[in-house]
Length: 233
Length: 190
Ligand SMILES: [Fe+2]
Image (cartoon, rainbow over all chains, first blue to last red; front, side, top):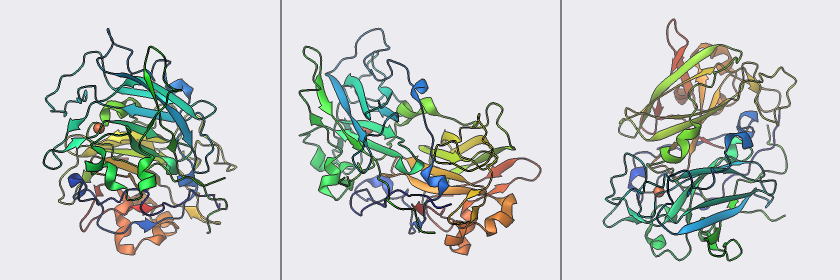
């Protein structure tokens, strides 16, 4: 059975596994060249998660606690697109982040900043028929991470998406425009192609901003595109 | 339409459990799925052979008939309606993962070829900027493995890194992932 595969990565537009500026990549990157694999039915299929997996408030990280979380409330919205600019409808988007002080609700986070009893920092959404998702949350803080002297992560949200197949799986991070830490961050700068890198920065959007409530940011996410013709056997 | 450059991948970081454990699935065979129930377990090891406690596997497989729960699998075969085929399994503090599933059936490969039963794996961890793809095959499928069109792409000495070893007398397989070194697991560029 010949299948239509997903387009190969253009060098520079995705990170390499070994990126010495990101110290923990050094012992976790493969040493050998990856084996070129023509995609098969196993690759171009993948799990599908429907609306039944996500509750109505799962995309509002400010809810679910006794009170409101501390921090600047924001709305993050955007479209999930395929590599040809078409919306990807009904696909799962997972989100996690630290609180406004830069602390994650996770046992291994030792940063000396307070937890917020009213903030967990995890959410999820399913895109609508037009590929649009929306989260309400608070702006995450920057945090130190010991990768090098005086290392600080820029403010970011972690995103995880599935798309239509196992080949479109994507875990990424969303950054904020104008963050002075961006030029210093080895994780953000692991991508050498500047235009690809800038896809990870959201934009302020007055139209997504809700009066008297929260600033809005737009973050469109592009998944791997598909070939026009079947893979050669 | 213009082709768009995909959004770059970034690491899951050390705190992914916060956002991802809600979908953990370590028993893919829950319910009345048809087929042989099996356990697959192993460790994820770094370049020094040290266990990686903050890694996560996602697995994707066909049902016992060799059919995927996905619209693009249009094979004329029975379909196991209760088997979804997806698992998400984190490693523990010793770098160990373990999941229960059913042994998948054979699925079609390129052209008229048939692929040996296998599970597709996406591997995520702190320190990894983009997930890696690999596959699990089964030691008790030696004949099918010899004819598998994907294993055939790999130099012979390295094929064994993708073959999970069945324990004597138990439906349990051992499969370790080595990021580097002599036993480095084969990862795919796909
Ligand atoms: Fe983070």
